[in-house]
Amino acid sequence: MAINSAEIAGWDHAYSGKVRDLYTSPESPNRVLMVASDRVSAYDHLLEPPIPGKGELLTSLSVWWFSQLSGVANHLAPEAETAARVPANVASRSMLVKTLEMYPIECVVRGYLSGSGWVEYQKTQSVCGVGLPAGLADGDRLPEPIFTPAWKAPMGEHDENISFERTVEIVGLEAATALRDASLAIFREASAIAESRGVILADTKFEFGADPEDGGTLTLGDEVLTSDSSRYWDAALYATGDRTASFDKQIVRNWLSANWDGTGTPPVLPPEIVEQTAARYRELITRLTGE
Image (cartoon, rainbow, N blue to C red; front, side, top):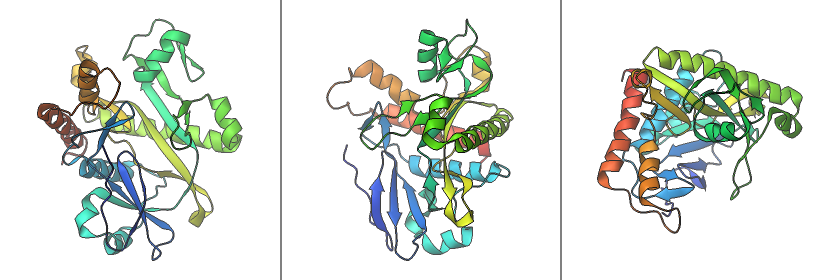
């Protein structure tokens, strides 16, 4: 699937990731316009067709979470500035953000054992160097949330799961400790909010940067606690033993696993898979925000 970034009045296209397009402008040298697309990826491949409304839902959820996290500095520009600088045709799926000096660390926090963490646990009884009790099963709640960072590899390479000790080597002890402590604190606060709405936050990833406009304050950036960066489960179904009802693109992953051997170009997603995925994204934001 080719990435076609839209032209936006007053902004110059700077970069496209799998989901988001970034724009800069000489009129706003310390700002970046992040525009979320409807693109969907799985297993390092962009898929066809996109998920209708996905970009708007991801943006809305990020903005909502930023407003919920008490005392956490984030990269959103002031609302008045956003209203003045962001064109109306992309406003619903855009965030005008500060330029940060980003740390090359994906701050992954896990409250439950699942995904790549479960795979690693079966081999080593640990995740990213964090030892865990014996006898855990896929989807079990951990005794306490754990910080399992990843190093953000250069473009074109895969991110690498690393230990806290390796994080210290990359960014220094003070920054590594700040990243770990902030990530765990945010995860605990977000988990409590989600659980009060019948949703389990199993794991997520955060990205942080230093804000040069504010003396290098540790600042939460990128997207936050969205369906693309997090694993959410339905608490009621989890209580019955169903640990597969996630509010993300797991439907897409499952369909691909059953219909593609991983070689060549992925098949086109059938309409029912696209709609089921869109419905899960919509349901999550409704459950969390009530909107």
